[in-house]
Length: 194
Image (cartoon, rainbow, N blue to C red):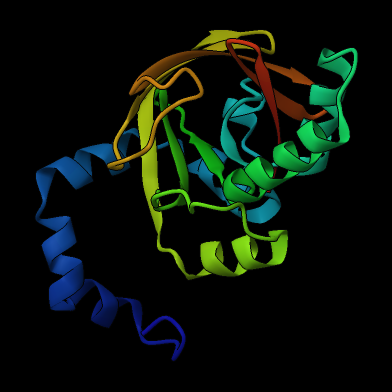
């Protein structure tokens, strides 16, 4: 209706619009919305209201920066260890972290599958992962400020485990140079906004 430039009265009287307008919870949320902030966000992609909370948004794993962090963390990495690390990153490079103003966080990625008996090539891994549906792997909450945060996550997808092998984890997060660094135990993942 909007694409065909239908009159506003017809849009308001449409049954689907009326269903939304008669839902009290939705109406209350709309009344609490800062419309000037929403308009600015729609125009520029930036919300003045939430500009100071830099963790908000969608973050995607940056495999090369993550690999570089792992190289820095370890003083000596063998060729075999580096090859294994690259294969592990193929499995997680589709991960996306969604952080919302209501202090919720979701980790999304390809649905977990059983690991193959022999490690396949990176091209085969990428092709297989592309076939998998994207699901919420874990969700939880976040707290913090001034580019230092703490995420508390619980696995939601069957078979998904954190690096410690557990179904839940507390992850320290920091923002440096526009990147989000997630540290769990001895591992660091680097993410970028998208």
